[in-house]
Length: 538
Image 1 (cartoon, rainbow, N blue to C red):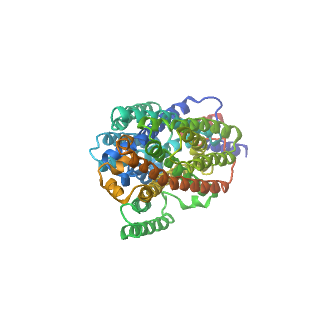
Image 2: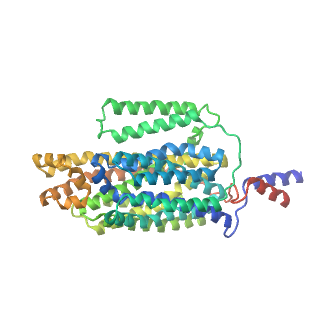
Image 3: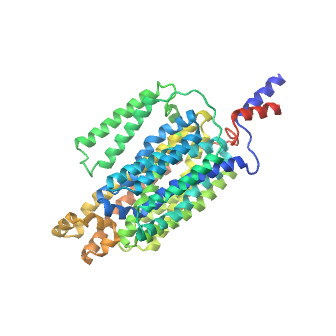
């Protein structure tokens, strides 16, 4: 009986090695690679955001504004569901490195883009790389660090996003104004090379090879269904009327494909997204809340520069710098909330407080008009940043704490999928609200003849976003554009506030579980090594 008990204890220890006190060099080596991956992903987002008005003014019109970020989000959304399963088969490290290479290729293509739609394609390639980097970084952390300790590390990972983001907007605006927006993509390349070197040499993540079967039918129907859904949302009201056969057909195809996906998942031996996970209140409501937070996060990042440049009249450099207070606040609360969660093991109240801060920030945005000052924008940015730092990584932690090792990768991928869908749908919906709002709002401030001439001119839509073009217009026309853009952005902020209310309600329904204090595997060591240590200890 004693021998049997000892063997059972050894087996449990092998599955969940005890938390080590102090700093584990193997964990830090792995974490360094993840921090660098987060760095290049965040630079991709924040360097480009302030330059989007300039890019659109040069390469396309207002109707195409949201396609540049949406293309990356769409690709990431398609890739994310299969990234976790592929990493189970081929290992986390190789797939993570592939993601970095694909991201670098997309960056290079973006830098040489000869026209708008080539840039959209190149951003799609970038997004595919991010579809591997983001969920696998979270899955690796989930593998090697216990949930109780994970709050600190995920807080630091979120802070790396914030630190890079502090530099990104100001640097992006400066580079765009003094050099070329193309260098915003080329600058990713040296960081990608450095990340590859660090990951190849120092990241040692254990991976237990087991025979797996890829759920091809599930992956195809899920990706196709999501793509049809996002395309319908992006095109509706812009390229095609909402009641057109194109939009109705896409939504219908999406519904059929997603129903087929659900049917396939109930019969697949290894489903790409097990439907049983959605039976958990924690999993379901965490994903809903995470999706809502992503919608508002990217709405703030991509549409606030439009307000600052088009309404207040700041330069591209200054519009990038205006995001810095939000990102500084995000760094502070990301690190602070991670420490608090690790020390207390509690997270629900912290999440609710974070969403409340974001809600206060968006409530302030709804008061913005033609007379809003930079100081008021900064105040709203700080409130949103305080909330983002708390929420951005914590929902992933909540989901990972509620699933087993076998579901870690797919659950993490599902969380990232929800976030990617929230980002893409948010940008599409908010972009549609903005573009349709401009049509009616400009009509209130410009006479019909002047409006027709403005819309048909080459500088028309570009002048809405580009301060340099706006400055060259007659004062009466420029004032009308500022008033019209301010009015068109108001329902964008209102929609963001409504979404945050939904996130708050969803978080209320999340059951708070104690955070586990054991990790699934030990960094830098294989499962075989761990078993040998336990056997010798016994």
